[in-house]
Image (cartoon, rainbow, N blue to C red; front, side):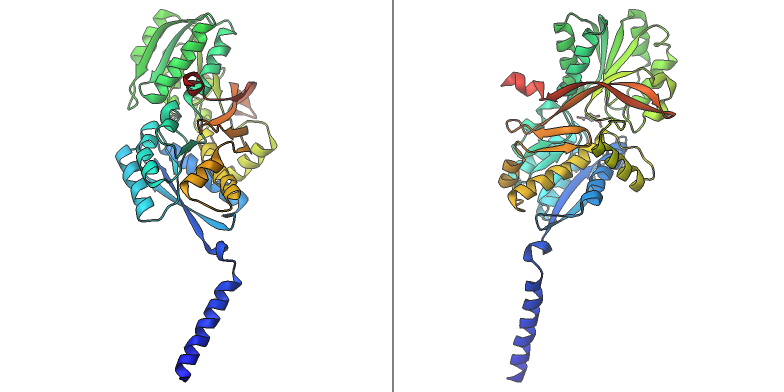
Length: 392
Ligand code: VNL
Protein backbone atom coordinates (compact mmCIF):
# COMPACT_ATOMS: atom_id res chain seq x y z
CA UNK A 1 0.00 0.00 0.00
CA UNK A 2 2.71 2.37 1.07
CA UNK A 3 4.73 1.42 -1.95
CA UNK A 4 1.84 2.17 -4.30
CA UNK A 5 1.24 5.59 -2.80
CA UNK A 6 4.91 6.43 -3.05
CA UNK A 7 4.89 5.49 -6.68
CA UNK A 8 1.86 7.66 -7.36
CA UNK A 9 3.41 10.54 -5.52
CA UNK A 10 6.56 10.15 -7.53
CA UNK A 11 4.53 10.09 -10.73
CA UNK A 12 2.76 13.25 -9.62
CA UNK A 13 6.05 15.02 -9.12
CA UNK A 14 7.25 13.95 -12.56
CA UNK A 15 4.08 15.18 -14.24
CA UNK A 16 4.27 18.43 -12.34
CA UNK A 17 7.82 18.98 -13.48
CA UNK A 18 6.80 18.43 -17.08
CA UNK A 19 3.88 20.81 -16.85
CA UNK A 20 6.12 23.56 -15.48
CA UNK A 21 7.84 23.82 -18.88
CA UNK A 22 5.64 24.96 -21.78
CA UNK A 23 4.96 21.80 -23.75
CA UNK A 24 5.68 23.37 -27.11
CA UNK A 25 9.14 24.58 -26.11
CA UNK A 26 10.29 21.01 -25.80
CA UNK A 27 9.37 20.05 -29.33
CA UNK A 28 12.22 19.87 -31.77
CA UNK A 29 11.74 20.32 -35.51
CA UNK A 30 14.42 18.56 -37.49
CA UNK A 31 15.48 20.21 -40.73
CA UNK A 32 17.48 18.04 -43.13
CA UNK A 33 19.99 20.08 -45.12
CA UNK A 34 21.47 17.89 -47.88
CA UNK A 35 24.45 19.38 -49.71
CA UNK A 36 27.61 18.54 -51.66
CA UNK A 37 30.05 18.87 -48.74
CA UNK A 38 32.72 16.93 -50.66
CA UNK A 39 33.56 16.54 -54.35
CA UNK A 40 33.88 19.19 -57.08
CA UNK A 41 31.04 21.33 -55.72
CA UNK A 42 32.07 21.25 -52.06
CA UNK A 43 32.33 25.06 -51.96
CA UNK A 44 28.55 25.20 -52.43
CA UNK A 45 27.96 22.88 -49.48
CA UNK A 46 30.41 24.81 -47.34
CA UNK A 47 28.78 28.16 -48.17
CA UNK A 48 25.13 27.08 -47.86
CA UNK A 49 25.65 25.28 -44.54
CA UNK A 50 27.62 28.23 -43.12
CA UNK A 51 24.86 30.62 -44.22
CA UNK A 52 22.14 28.51 -42.58
CA UNK A 53 24.14 28.24 -39.37
CA UNK A 54 24.76 31.99 -39.37
CA UNK A 55 20.99 32.54 -39.38
CA UNK A 56 20.58 30.33 -36.31
CA UNK A 57 23.45 32.11 -34.57
CA UNK A 58 21.96 35.53 -35.29
CA UNK A 59 18.31 34.76 -34.56
CA UNK A 60 18.50 31.90 -32.05
CA UNK A 61 17.40 28.29 -32.56
CA UNK A 62 13.78 28.63 -31.42
CA UNK A 63 10.75 29.83 -33.36
CA UNK A 64 7.02 29.60 -32.56
CA UNK A 65 7.86 27.45 -29.54
CA UNK A 66 9.85 24.93 -31.59
CA UNK A 67 13.54 24.24 -31.35
CA UNK A 68 15.09 24.01 -34.79
CA UNK A 69 17.67 21.27 -35.21
CA UNK A 70 19.74 21.33 -38.39
CA UNK A 71 20.89 17.95 -39.68
CA UNK A 72 23.53 18.48 -42.37
CA UNK A 73 24.27 15.55 -44.70
CA UNK A 74 26.77 15.19 -47.55
CA UNK A 75 25.53 13.85 -50.90
CA UNK A 76 28.94 14.45 -52.56
CA UNK A 77 27.08 15.93 -55.52
CA UNK A 78 25.62 12.56 -56.55
CA UNK A 79 21.84 12.60 -57.21
CA UNK A 80 21.23 8.97 -56.19
CA UNK A 81 22.75 9.73 -52.83
CA UNK A 82 20.66 12.88 -52.43
CA UNK A 83 17.48 10.86 -52.94
CA UNK A 84 18.58 8.07 -50.61
CA UNK A 85 19.56 10.54 -47.87
CA UNK A 86 16.29 12.49 -48.24
CA UNK A 87 14.32 9.27 -47.85
CA UNK A 88 16.37 8.16 -44.88
CA UNK A 89 16.01 11.52 -43.13
CA UNK A 90 12.23 11.60 -43.59
CA UNK A 91 11.52 7.95 -42.76
CA UNK A 92 14.08 7.20 -40.03
CA UNK A 93 15.07 10.58 -38.60
CA UNK A 94 11.62 12.18 -38.55
CA UNK A 95 12.79 15.22 -40.48
CA UNK A 96 9.87 17.59 -41.13
CA UNK A 97 11.54 19.97 -43.58
CA UNK A 98 14.17 19.42 -46.25
CA UNK A 99 16.57 21.99 -47.71
CA UNK A 100 19.57 22.00 -50.07
CA UNK A 101 19.69 21.12 -53.75
CA UNK A 102 23.27 22.18 -54.49
CA UNK A 103 22.84 21.54 -58.22
CA UNK A 104 19.80 20.98 -60.43
CA UNK A 105 20.03 17.16 -60.63
CA UNK A 106 20.34 17.00 -56.83
CA UNK A 107 17.28 19.20 -56.28
CA UNK A 108 15.29 17.17 -58.82
CA UNK A 109 16.20 13.94 -56.99
CA UNK A 110 14.42 15.16 -53.86
CA UNK A 111 11.18 16.12 -55.66
CA UNK A 112 9.52 12.66 -55.59
CA UNK A 113 10.38 12.24 -51.89
CA UNK A 114 8.91 15.67 -51.05
CA UNK A 115 5.73 14.91 -53.00
CA UNK A 116 5.21 11.45 -51.58
CA UNK A 117 5.94 12.32 -47.96
CA UNK A 118 4.34 15.80 -48.22
CA UNK A 119 7.56 17.20 -46.74
CA UNK A 120 8.50 20.70 -47.93
CA UNK A 121 11.84 21.11 -49.71
CA UNK A 122 13.52 24.52 -49.83
CA UNK A 123 15.97 24.75 -52.71
CA UNK A 124 18.92 26.86 -51.53
CA UNK A 125 21.13 26.76 -54.62
CA UNK A 126 20.02 25.19 -57.89
CA UNK A 127 18.67 27.54 -60.56
CA UNK A 128 16.91 25.68 -63.38
CA UNK A 129 13.48 27.27 -63.77
CA UNK A 130 11.57 23.98 -63.96
CA UNK A 131 12.64 22.72 -60.50
CA UNK A 132 9.66 24.26 -58.66
CA UNK A 133 7.34 22.51 -61.10
CA UNK A 134 8.72 19.11 -60.10
CA UNK A 135 6.75 19.07 -56.82
CA UNK A 136 4.08 21.23 -55.17
CA UNK A 137 6.18 20.91 -51.99
CA UNK A 138 9.20 22.69 -53.48
CA UNK A 139 9.99 26.36 -52.92
CA UNK A 140 13.27 28.18 -53.53
CA UNK A 141 15.55 30.79 -51.94
CA UNK A 142 18.25 30.95 -54.63
CA UNK A 143 16.91 32.25 -57.94
CA UNK A 144 16.36 31.09 -61.50
CA UNK A 145 18.76 31.36 -64.42
CA UNK A 146 16.12 32.99 -66.65
CA UNK A 147 15.58 35.58 -63.90
CA UNK A 148 19.21 36.65 -63.72
CA UNK A 149 20.33 36.02 -67.33
CA UNK A 150 17.67 38.16 -68.99
CA UNK A 151 18.92 41.45 -67.44
CA UNK A 152 22.42 40.74 -68.75
CA UNK A 153 20.87 40.59 -72.23
CA UNK A 154 19.14 43.93 -71.64
CA UNK A 155 22.34 45.53 -70.39
CA UNK A 156 24.44 44.19 -73.29
CA UNK A 157 22.01 45.41 -75.96
CA UNK A 158 21.78 48.83 -74.36
CA UNK A 159 25.54 49.25 -73.96
CA UNK A 160 26.90 49.03 -77.46
CA UNK A 161 27.40 45.25 -77.65
CA UNK A 162 26.23 43.95 -81.05
CA UNK A 163 27.74 40.48 -81.54
CA UNK A 164 27.97 37.83 -78.83
CA UNK A 165 29.16 34.26 -78.49
CA UNK A 166 27.48 32.34 -75.65
CA UNK A 167 29.19 29.66 -73.56
CA UNK A 168 27.24 27.66 -70.98
CA UNK A 169 27.48 24.41 -69.02
CA UNK A 170 25.50 21.79 -70.89
CA UNK A 171 22.70 21.04 -68.40
CA UNK A 172 19.53 22.65 -67.04
CA UNK A 173 20.74 26.01 -65.75
CA UNK A 174 23.12 26.54 -68.69
CA UNK A 175 20.37 25.89 -71.20
CA UNK A 176 18.05 28.29 -69.33
CA UNK A 177 20.80 30.95 -69.25
CA UNK A 178 21.57 30.60 -72.95
CA UNK A 179 17.87 30.81 -73.87
CA UNK A 180 16.98 33.85 -71.79
CA UNK A 181 20.10 35.90 -72.39
CA UNK A 182 19.79 35.29 -76.14
CA UNK A 183 16.05 35.89 -76.35
CA UNK A 184 16.36 39.27 -74.65
CA UNK A 185 19.56 40.30 -76.47
CA UNK A 186 18.19 39.40 -79.92
CA UNK A 187 14.84 41.02 -79.10
CA UNK A 188 16.72 44.26 -78.53
CA UNK A 189 18.68 43.99 -81.81
CA UNK A 190 21.73 41.96 -80.82
CA UNK A 191 23.18 39.03 -82.75
CA UNK A 192 24.35 35.65 -81.39
CA UNK A 193 27.11 34.43 -83.70
CA UNK A 194 27.79 31.14 -81.93
CA UNK A 195 26.28 29.18 -79.02
CA UNK A 196 28.62 26.72 -77.31
CA UNK A 197 27.79 24.23 -74.56
CA UNK A 198 30.55 22.62 -72.49
CA UNK A 199 30.28 19.52 -70.28
CA UNK A 200 29.53 20.08 -66.59
CA UNK A 201 32.35 17.75 -65.51
CA UNK A 202 35.96 18.76 -66.24
CA UNK A 203 35.33 21.30 -69.01
CA UNK A 204 38.24 22.45 -71.15
CA UNK A 205 37.70 25.96 -72.49
CA UNK A 206 40.86 26.27 -74.58
CA UNK A 207 39.52 25.08 -77.99
CA UNK A 208 36.43 27.21 -77.52
CA UNK A 209 38.44 30.30 -76.61
CA UNK A 210 40.60 29.92 -79.69
CA UNK A 211 37.47 29.93 -81.86
CA UNK A 212 36.15 32.99 -80.03
CA UNK A 213 39.37 34.87 -80.72
CA UNK A 214 38.98 34.17 -84.42
CA UNK A 215 35.27 35.06 -84.52
CA UNK A 216 35.97 38.43 -82.81
CA UNK A 217 32.62 39.04 -81.11
CA UNK A 218 32.11 42.17 -79.00
CA UNK A 219 31.53 39.97 -75.97
CA UNK A 220 31.26 36.43 -74.63
CA UNK A 221 28.29 35.64 -72.40
CA UNK A 222 29.05 32.87 -69.90
CA UNK A 223 27.20 30.72 -67.38
CA UNK A 224 29.16 28.18 -65.33
CA UNK A 225 28.13 26.82 -61.93
CA UNK A 226 29.60 28.27 -58.75
CA UNK A 227 33.26 27.32 -58.41
CA UNK A 228 33.94 26.67 -62.12
CA UNK A 229 34.66 30.32 -62.97
CA UNK A 230 38.26 30.33 -61.75
CA UNK A 231 39.61 28.04 -64.48
CA UNK A 232 37.60 29.86 -67.14
CA UNK A 233 38.94 33.25 -66.09
CA UNK A 234 42.51 31.97 -66.18
CA UNK A 235 42.15 30.50 -69.69
CA UNK A 236 40.28 33.59 -70.91
CA UNK A 237 43.25 35.72 -69.87
CA UNK A 238 45.92 33.22 -71.01
CA UNK A 239 44.44 33.13 -74.52
CA UNK A 240 44.62 36.92 -74.75
CA UNK A 241 40.89 37.52 -75.15
CA UNK A 242 40.91 40.83 -73.24
CA UNK A 243 43.71 42.16 -75.50
CA UNK A 244 41.72 41.02 -78.54
CA UNK A 245 38.95 43.37 -77.36
CA UNK A 246 36.47 40.66 -76.34
CA UNK A 247 34.46 41.72 -73.31
CA UNK A 248 33.38 39.20 -70.68
CA UNK A 249 29.76 39.33 -69.55
CA UNK A 250 28.25 36.60 -67.38
CA UNK A 251 25.88 35.52 -64.68
CA UNK A 252 27.24 36.19 -61.20
CA UNK A 253 27.94 32.47 -60.76
CA UNK A 254 31.13 33.00 -62.80
CA UNK A 255 32.50 35.80 -60.58
CA UNK A 256 31.34 34.01 -57.43
CA UNK A 257 32.50 35.98 -54.37
CA UNK A 258 33.92 32.79 -52.87
CA UNK A 259 36.68 32.66 -55.52
CA UNK A 260 36.64 36.15 -57.07
CA UNK A 261 39.52 37.57 -55.09
CA UNK A 262 41.81 34.71 -56.16
CA UNK A 263 41.05 35.37 -59.86
CA UNK A 264 43.19 38.50 -59.78
CA UNK A 265 43.46 41.25 -62.37
CA UNK A 266 41.95 39.35 -65.36
CA UNK A 267 38.55 39.48 -63.63
CA UNK A 268 38.54 43.30 -63.45
CA UNK A 269 35.81 44.86 -65.58
CA UNK A 270 33.71 41.70 -65.93
CA UNK A 271 30.03 42.61 -66.06
CA UNK A 272 27.55 40.24 -64.43
CA UNK A 273 23.93 40.02 -63.35
CA UNK A 274 22.99 38.34 -60.10
CA UNK A 275 20.95 38.48 -56.89
CA UNK A 276 23.72 38.83 -54.33
CA UNK A 277 27.14 40.39 -53.88
CA UNK A 278 29.16 40.41 -50.66
CA UNK A 279 29.62 44.14 -51.30
CA UNK A 280 25.83 44.79 -51.43
CA UNK A 281 25.28 47.99 -49.46
CA UNK A 282 22.56 47.58 -46.83
CA UNK A 283 22.41 47.39 -43.02
CA UNK A 284 21.06 43.81 -43.23
CA UNK A 285 23.99 42.72 -45.39
CA UNK A 286 26.51 44.50 -43.23
CA UNK A 287 25.27 42.57 -40.18
CA UNK A 288 25.21 39.32 -42.16
CA UNK A 289 28.72 39.65 -43.60
CA UNK A 290 30.07 40.55 -40.18
CA UNK A 291 28.46 37.57 -38.42
CA UNK A 292 29.36 35.18 -41.24
CA UNK A 293 33.03 36.13 -41.58
CA UNK A 294 33.50 36.06 -37.82
CA UNK A 295 32.05 32.55 -37.49
CA UNK A 296 33.89 31.21 -40.55
CA UNK A 297 37.50 32.21 -40.20
CA UNK A 298 37.13 35.25 -42.49
CA UNK A 299 35.59 33.27 -45.37
CA UNK A 300 33.69 35.59 -47.67
CA UNK A 301 29.94 34.81 -47.95
CA UNK A 302 28.81 34.27 -51.55
CA UNK A 303 25.32 33.99 -53.07
CA UNK A 304 25.11 30.30 -52.09
CA UNK A 305 25.49 31.23 -48.43
CA UNK A 306 22.60 33.68 -48.74
CA UNK A 307 20.43 30.94 -50.27
CA UNK A 308 21.18 28.93 -47.11
CA UNK A 309 20.59 31.85 -44.77
CA UNK A 310 17.26 32.69 -46.42
CA UNK A 311 16.08 29.06 -46.34
CA UNK A 312 16.15 29.45 -42.55
CA UNK A 313 14.60 32.93 -42.74
CA UNK A 314 11.73 31.44 -44.74
CA UNK A 315 11.28 28.52 -42.33
CA UNK A 316 11.15 30.92 -39.37
CA UNK A 317 8.66 33.25 -41.04
CA UNK A 318 6.45 30.36 -42.15
CA UNK A 319 6.45 28.70 -38.72
CA UNK A 320 5.53 31.99 -37.09
CA UNK A 321 2.59 32.18 -39.46
CA UNK A 322 1.45 28.57 -38.82
CA UNK A 323 2.09 28.82 -35.07
CA UNK A 324 4.63 26.07 -35.31
CA UNK A 325 2.60 23.73 -37.53
CA UNK A 326 5.17 21.95 -39.72
CA UNK A 327 2.77 19.75 -41.67
CA UNK A 328 3.58 20.00 -45.38
CA UNK A 329 0.32 21.52 -46.68
CA UNK A 330 0.14 24.13 -43.87
CA UNK A 331 3.79 25.08 -44.32
CA UNK A 332 3.45 25.45 -48.10
CA UNK A 333 0.35 27.61 -47.71
CA UNK A 334 2.27 29.88 -45.32
CA UNK A 335 5.22 30.15 -47.70
CA UNK A 336 3.12 31.55 -50.56
CA UNK A 337 3.36 35.32 -50.67
CA UNK A 338 5.80 35.46 -47.73
CA UNK A 339 8.09 38.48 -47.88
CA UNK A 340 11.14 39.50 -45.88
CA UNK A 341 14.32 41.56 -46.07
CA UNK A 342 17.26 39.40 -47.04
CA UNK A 343 20.93 40.42 -46.97
CA UNK A 344 20.46 40.66 -50.78
CA UNK A 345 17.53 43.12 -50.52
CA UNK A 346 13.73 42.72 -50.44
CA UNK A 347 12.43 39.27 -51.45
CA UNK A 348 9.11 37.41 -51.53
CA UNK A 349 7.78 34.01 -52.56
CA UNK A 350 5.61 34.12 -55.68
CA UNK A 351 2.30 32.56 -54.53
CA UNK A 352 1.69 31.09 -58.00
CA UNK A 353 5.07 29.50 -58.71
CA UNK A 354 6.66 29.20 -55.21
CA UNK A 355 9.78 30.77 -56.75
CA UNK A 356 11.53 33.79 -55.29
CA UNK A 357 10.80 37.34 -56.50
CA UNK A 358 13.87 39.51 -56.04
CA UNK A 359 16.03 42.34 -57.36
CA UNK A 360 18.65 41.47 -59.94
CA UNK A 361 21.70 43.70 -59.81
CA UNK A 362 24.12 44.51 -62.61
CA UNK A 363 27.65 44.52 -61.25
CA UNK A 364 31.19 45.20 -62.37
CA UNK A 365 34.28 43.54 -60.91
CA UNK A 366 36.28 46.32 -59.29
CA UNK A 367 38.93 46.73 -56.65
CA UNK A 368 37.50 47.81 -53.29
CA UNK A 369 39.86 48.30 -50.33
CA UNK A 370 42.50 46.17 -52.07
CA UNK A 371 40.16 43.26 -52.83
CA UNK A 372 38.16 42.28 -55.89
CA UNK A 373 34.40 42.69 -55.53
CA UNK A 374 31.23 42.56 -57.59
CA UNK A 375 30.19 46.21 -57.35
CA UNK A 376 26.51 46.87 -58.11
CA UNK A 377 25.72 49.72 -60.50
CA UNK A 378 22.10 49.11 -61.62
CA UNK A 379 19.02 47.33 -60.25
CA UNK A 380 16.21 45.47 -62.01
CA UNK A 381 13.55 45.54 -59.31
CA UNK A 382 11.32 42.68 -58.10
CA UNK A 383 11.84 40.27 -60.99
CA UNK A 384 9.77 37.10 -61.23
CA UNK A 385 11.02 34.01 -63.02
CA UNK A 386 10.32 34.94 -66.67
CA UNK A 387 10.16 31.29 -67.79
CA UNK A 388 7.00 30.67 -65.75
CA UNK A 389 5.58 34.13 -66.49
CA UNK A 390 5.84 33.25 -70.18
CA UNK A 391 4.07 29.91 -69.71
CA UNK A 392 1.14 31.46 -67.81
C1 VNL B 1 23.27 25.50 -60.45
C2 VNL B 1 22.98 26.81 -60.81
C3 VNL B 1 24.46 25.22 -59.75
C4 VNL B 1 23.86 27.83 -60.48
C5 VNL B 1 25.32 26.25 -59.44
O1 VNL B 1 26.49 26.06 -58.76
C6 VNL B 1 25.03 27.55 -59.81
C7 VNL B 1 22.36 24.40 -60.81
C8 VNL B 1 26.81 24.82 -58.19
O2 VNL B 1 21.16 24.67 -61.00
O3 VNL B 1 22.83 23.25 -60.89
O4 VNL B 1 25.91 28.53 -59.51
